[in-house]
Image 1 (tube, rainbow, N blue to C red):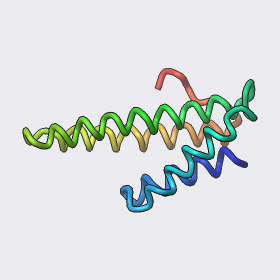
Image 2 (cartoon, helix red, strand yellow):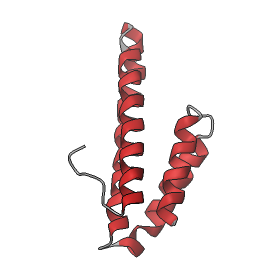
Image 3 (cartoon, rainbow, N blue to C red):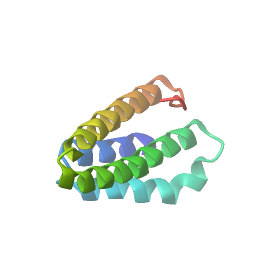
Length: 105
């Protein structure tokens, strides 16, 4: 249940285009606080999946915003948004099926 809440909070922040970025931050804090409790379970893989998604997307968005000065940053923003959406959907579907998210996506 806690993992579904983390996915929901992350998705809420994503779907509101960052207007509710606090929801995404709440998901990240929740996952870091509860991470030791999930060690060795299926849920640990989902927490790692979401945390990697958060940190990589933050990096790519920062690079994209810097690239806006040379007018190509919007391509990076679009690519990052599509990638995050894909990872949210794929991870959440794997959770519903009772599987860990694929490590190769």
